[in-house]
Image 1 (tube, helix red, strand yellow):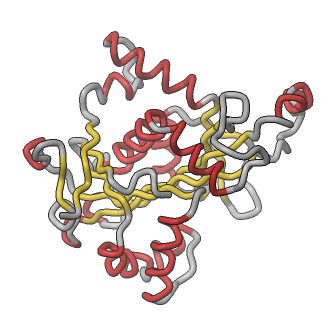
Image 2 (cartoon, one colour):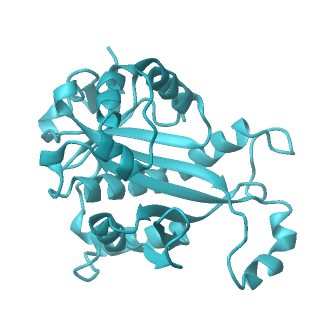
Image 3 (tube, one colour):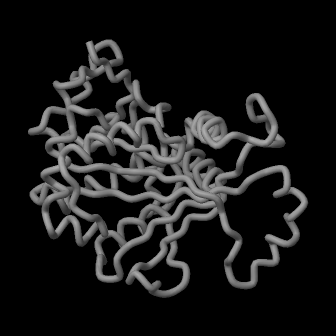
Length: 267
């Protein structure tokens, strides 16, 4: 997606920047590691194929990608911007976080709601958003980088959801011409994380963020962690943050004031 191509996100634990050609060489080295391949269910690619992937991901209307980098102080952003190549050099890169959009298939067991909504769904497509995160640099695992990356991504999605869905609709050719309206705007039904059964740390991470397990282990040895009603959930989280409320597990309260969007400058 292009919606994030000029945006970097600063948090105390991690910086998120758009995935650029400058990042591909190190990303390729990560994905050549057999342990990372197994953890991410990925096949090894050539360097040329990785460059092609980076370009196709930027052009795709169903995939949003950020590269994770070492944190910088607020002084690292000058006049509300950071400079490409300075905050995200190879030595600063830690991993990535991704968001995929695909149609909701309505195949959940006992889905009576789907039948009730049939008329509405003729005008409005429901979508699922899949989230995955990879901290590739071993010495940075277990330091809260994955948690900070996922919560930062969720903040970004909530703030820019209209633009993300608009780009998705344009790329997939809506039946009605022109921009989407409130009646034709797709609905992000839920977020999903597909995690290997034995990856207890990732399961705990997404549980801490608010996802819950749905069903058992699938054919691929994965569990599905699901967060329904994403917009409603985020609205409640941010309201708690503003009021200084929430229990000990409320990451909205925990991260109060720690999220900052700045310009990603290529000058």
